[in-house]
Image (cartoon, rainbow over all chains, first blue to last red):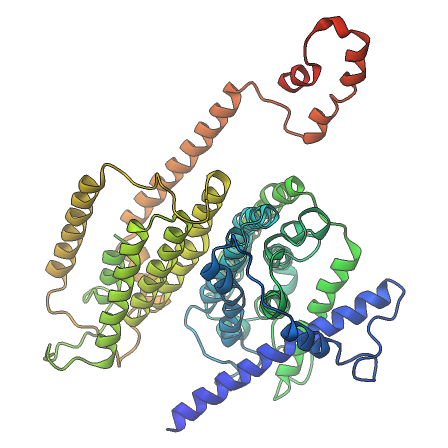
Length: 322
Length: 235
């Protein structure tokens, strides 16, 4: 009974994190983008600096009619948002925020493979949405999503493999346990490749070709309204949380920090994740969208060779120091 | 093939030193895991059947996701965690996405495809049944009464899998990687040759858009009688 209670509590906590953190990132994005562009952003909802804006948005989305186009493939169209969103919930289960068994939803033996595998499944949601909408813009968006995933999955995997090689384990808590500060310069190339490829997999600017609103009207999500559209947006922000958490855990040493290692490790994890989330937002405001061919070229001619070089470097250093 | 490999990895008794329970097991008092294994197996089989029988191409690809995911769950139930995640990563995450990409690029109508049928269906069925029979025979013959001890340490953890893969199965592993490399090189050679034969049209869209000034030029030579835009496009 106690075990069941433990499992239920962990699931509940992960679920609460899943519901709140993406909203916090979303609200931060509203405000940070606004200030970077010289305006205020939402100011009225909730009173203090528009803190309740996203809740108001949620209420608005819930009130809208849920429209399914007549020509659409009904079941797949309705299933797609869930397929896009649920994988990130599963990934959150495996990300450790502190040392010990108490600070992770579920300790997995092959955690790195689990998170990368499940994140890859989330893209199926966009593909299903793009195809099932019976809309040419949506289909184009789906095509671009698939092409982008295929080219950026490889460098992401290779970068993660490099850090797994360095740690000698594929378990996420194991990798953070093995972390030393000098891994940061050693694995910096892999970290950059992982983060950039992750941005591309999330279709965040400057890699937002699949949802380019000025070209293909939000791509795969053109036909979505109301709550289902909100679920896609939530998936994007949950993806930011997951990507930043993963980069923190794999490359930035998770709960390790200059001080406060005992008991306050989770603060370090959250702090690093928050800083990375800020960088994600910053990049969105700073860079223009890449063109589709530039995007493919960037991955195949730059990120893949860089990640291969990182693996070679990791292997050499590993052999030398052992 | 992968199924047999995974079973070999998880249930190989000798080299990896995996303790296997040899106690008596009754078929009439199945455990919860065995029931779950059977149910997921039935689901996987059903999804696989729908994959090859449905007339809707994209639905077939999505049912394939269900079948491959069901297979991953079976690996998990056999304690082969690493194989399960790799199954999801490679097959669901990459192969099916590639398949869907190909479908969307070519022809993926919503609704039934009237030509999504093959006259070879009986031959295909015979081949499939023969392949399945051979696989089942090999697996059953190799692991007759071996049972995985689910309570002990995981017999298919990443460490055990890696050790048996790179100590006892390293030659097949290397042979397979050479085969895959050959296939990769072959694919690149084939695609490059196909492009060279088409006498390389301008790739950049701006290069072909540069031909638009030709239209006023045709106004100067109306007697030419040709359609300049088409000429320009063919160039």
